[in-house]
Image 1: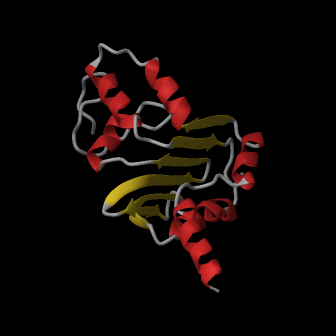
Image 2: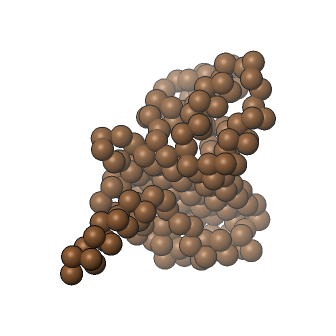
Image 3: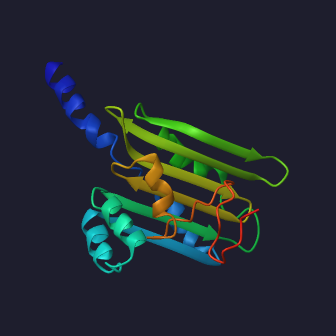
Length: 182
């Protein structure tokens, strides 16, 4: 009994590490009209960061951010018609985010349009050690998983890099054209 308990305690950190993309999600690529598939482990993140321009202050910040990350995983599928993925496909991701270290911090559901978005944080020792985003629409499904230590204020900096969507929000921030977002 003691040996089983020790084994379980040793496995806890490994179980909390990362969200695994199930085969049912990977198979959606065959049905999708557009697919974004980003899989960057720590070594690939470091390699990718080397290709960012060193003299740009924005990319220098991104390089700093990714230096401690263990992985960035993005799966985004656009479909020509609704119903190409099932609720059970999304549930296979959500079920992994119900662990003791994960907490859903944002949930938005629009009944009329069928949109459902969620943001989850994984915390350990008072620090954020992971982020997962699920954005489900009738003709689009996007899953983002960032594995590793990250500060909330750094999340916006990662947007637009490594396949992570830009996080413009509703703050009135200016977009790339210099116009204020509405």
